[in-house]
Each structure stands twice: as structure tokens, then as C-alpha cells.
Length: 386
Length: 139
Image (cartoon, rainbow over all chains, first blue to last red; front, side, top):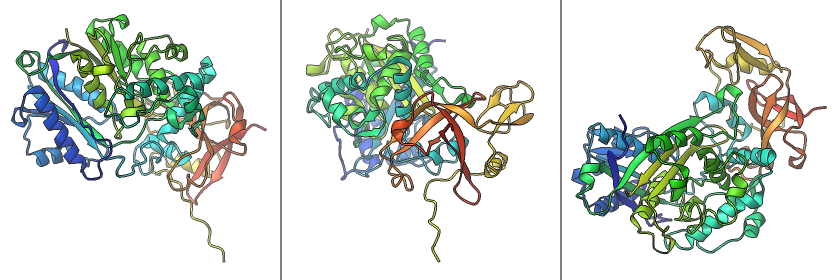
């Protein structure tokens, strides 16, 4: 059974806040849920499936959130695989809807990472009970350090340069300058990125995503019900998820989860790379984008440096990428997978104003969760308005 | 009498499954595991082979020599113990026996570390129970 075209994204909402010391995480989630339901023309009473996780939640946070909003859904999913979780939730919601387990799914995220001064990327990972962590944490592994080791290896194998990585940050900032809600909107240059301090070599400060507060929500429902709602449906036509890890010490570190999840998503959607009009790719760091584009097959392995250069990723380029400004410039409240699906949906609806991609019919969203240099998940979605 | 400074970095959790490996490190010996059924070598230690799920395990002594596979010099880490240690070099070392292990490269400046550089194990006794396997440029 294929779930392609059985479900559609019908409501999206990106919380406009980037710093909210006056709000709790649950409040940001509830405001986001209201926004997405309003966008769809549905109410909270229509929701019968709930998908959520978060960095600030307890182990049973999804049940706590049901208590908070007085929800009694028929279907619960708190898959927690890092920042990609909400891309995976969208796939899971489509599967649950296609098989009749629920009809109106609310996918929601909120975080006050910035106002709580949470060191997302440079805080270390002490205290984990997982076996794998016992052989990493004592050596000072950080999120940025883990990604930095991928960048270093890519430079060694393929001669990729810091200037090429910087091009990604520059393009994201250009896009942020056209997004009134983005946290950082002043244009930057390759030289600015190169002159910013090294956080974990070879990654500079401006190779790293920002830390913000924020949240968002999605409403997914059946293709049949989607036809009667307020906005033009955005159909889920392909998806895939995968993990990559140390593989008992044998891993080729430049192969990432996107290779597997992307292949599945393209096969299931029945589309080719040339059909993708815009992409939302998790940009925790500039290297994340480069490695993901190679592994999704937009270019060959080793060619990512050239591929991201020359304006190809601009909103008016060959492969418009992260038109909201991404995690590098717009927002990154701990996990950002939900924003990938939100912006892709807005582009497919033609709601993006000055940063709108022309004739946008098919979009791809890929989330990475965890860290590329130790272990991570990848989730890919292909969406269309056709 | 001078008080010994407390070790502030996070420590591994020792349990019945991994204790023999950590005890060997305490004796300044580095081991890998090899499956007696399918011959797959594995790092880190675990009770069953992840390839074939066999519990029949041979401990093989590693040479302690390898090459830097990739690395990063960390200039920002807000965790206790590390914020006082920057910059430090974190690396994957590919052992001559094959597996890649995460470690620190010590006894040289970050600018001296290169991918492909031969390195050798150094045992750092950090507490009475825990010794860490770090690496330095091969001599």
C-alpha cells in the first residue's frame, strides 16, 4: 500500500516570536496550534491525532500536553529523533490517516531555548545513559564539534573550502532579509563569515545556526477532507526516514541518513531531482546543507562545494533552498524540523511575498536530527500542490 | 596538605557489560571485541555481536596505533571541565585493526593535527576507576 497523495498539509503556522521570556514552552505550542487550526479553518475539537516532542518536555510530555489542552486524541506519536522529528511526524501522520487511525492530525512544537539560555550546540552531553555516549562524552563532544569533523573530512577528501561553506550562510541571510520575522536580517558576505571566530574548526560562528525561541504547528488531514478546507491542499507524495551511526566503528562518515531517506522519498513520490522546485534542508550548520544535498543526490559526492556556489541556492536560483532564512538566520529554537514543512507549504501555496519561488509545484523537505559526526536521523518529505 | 583537584569532566557510566573493557584500560591495555562466529570486529564493547547477535566474543588486544581520520579543534564548550580546557582536539582515530574511535589528540597543538597523521595511544588515568584512551603523534 502506498500512502502517496492520501494525506495533505492543510494548515500551517510559524510562531512569530524569536525571544519570548514572557511565555512558556506549552504556551508557545498552544498558540501555534491555534494558528495552524485557524489557517486550516478547523477547530481544536476536530483534532483526533497528536504528534509532538520537544527538548524541554518530560519523558511523557505528549500526555502532559494533552492534559494542558484537554485533548483526548485517538492517536499519539511522540517519536523523538532530534530536529528531524517533525518531518518524520508528518510522514507518520500521513500513514496513520491513510490507514484510518485518525483523520485530523496536529503536529506541534515549541521551545524557549533562547530565553532560557540553553547552550544547544556547545553545551556538551553529560549524563546520558546510552551505551554509545559513554565512549564519546568524556572526550568533550559537542553538537558543533561533531558536525565540524564532517566538514574537516569533506575538505580533506574533496578540497571543499571554508569559502564554499560560507556561501551557504550568505544565501540564507539574503533569504532572511526578505522574511520580516527572521531574527538576523542584515546581509553578510563570505568575508564576514570567514572573519567570524572559530567555534570548532573548521566551522566559524556564522557557519552555525542561531538559537532562538519559537514554535510552529501543522495540520494534516485526508485528501478527501482537505478539498473542503480553507487553503489549497499540499499533498504528501513521498517520504522516507533513516539513521546513520558509528556502525561498530566501520562508518564512512560522509554518507549520511539522507542517502537512504532521500532515495525512499524520491522512489515513493515517483519524481526526479529536476522536478524539485525548491528545497528546505535542515541547516544546523553550513556543512549540514552541503552534505545533505550530496546525499539526497542533487549533486555527486564531493561536488557539494561547487554546487552551493554561484547563487544556485538563492530563491531565484536553480535550486531555491531555505527561503525563510533557515536556522542559520531566521530561527532555531532547539529543533527546527517543523519550519521546513511550514515554509515548503507556504511556497507551494504562493504565500511567500518577495521571496516566493516562481511556479513552485513540487518541494522537498529534509530534516536532520542528532549530530552528523556521531549518530543522527534523517527524514525526507516530498510535497506538491498538484 | 594540598587537596587534589576534582576531575570536572563527565565520566563514563561503567556497568556489567562494559566493565572488562574499562578495567583493561586501567591496566593500560586497549582491547577490541571480535565475534567468534562471524569474525566481525566491533568498537565499542557490547555483549552480543551486532552483525549476527552471537554472544561468543573474543577480546583482541589492539596495537594502540592508528591514523587521524578526522578532527576538530574546539574553541567553545560551556560544559564544566571543558570550558577550562579550550582549545582541545577531538578526533576519530582509525585504529590499525580497522575501527574508528572518538578520542582526543594530546601532546601537540591543534595546528599540528592533520588527517592521516600516525598516532599512538596514551592512557590518561582520570579517576581511580576510569582511564581514558587518548592519542598523541606517533613517536
